[in-house]
Image (cartoon, rainbow, N blue to C red):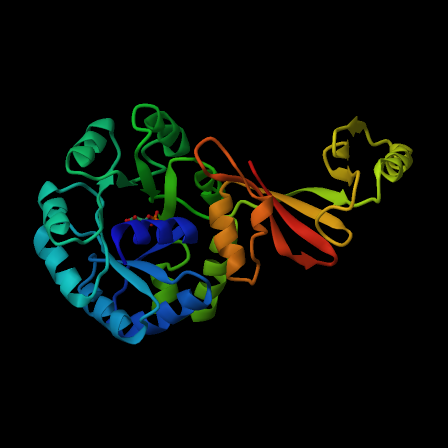
Length: 321
Ligand code: 3PG
């Protein structure tokens, strides 16, 4: 994978688990459990003596797993990790020597930063994707938003203190490329071989990072007359009528279309912060984007789309927000 492909992969998955493993024999069943849970990527940290062997085992046995090395504090460890099969290098801090070795050897490298000066050092070394660590202790989402002001070109892999309760806040933060963390692969879960639980936590994390929220149902009608009649009937139930050009909104939760629109019966709209990520997630479940429905924002990111496949007679609609 090129660096650009790897970063897109990180973005689309939305989660890069941080693994600390004591027994290299457990690395392959762990990788299999993660793949089953929808997360075919891991940062195996050099915090244990088993890291190198674990990377080797996963690289050999699970070719679909994208495995990288974490806690790489110097070029010597980077060399060892890459020789073992690591496809990317992550560190908690920024060691210019490690970054230079990775750049010279074409190895994607995401060093850790948590201050503006460290970000400038990263930029001066040619990096615009950095790890924000320790995220929660360094100011979390608020700090990331503030860093977005002077450094709009920088995207962050955020880790440190992120868990199911706050992961969606990070997913909604525009300069967050992807989210790292250990909560779905905790050392005791690995130690006790709780592979099903790891799969379940991975699935839960993949869903959480989408930040999906149901917003409205769209109802198709034949024409404006039928739409208005339908609207006045729903008004009997206390819903507010907002008449638009192509549809009538009832409160914010129902949209009565003034013509037959997408979906046999209508559509179901879900809000999410990152349509590219959620479209990639849904693609794995068999959903394909209805290309003519896509609208983009000024930055060229999707802000609205529909899918070709129906659920219960309804088209699925994503709205950025
Ligand atoms: C890291 O190195 O990125 C962190 O140890 C992961 O943070 P967490 O353990 O708080 O998830």
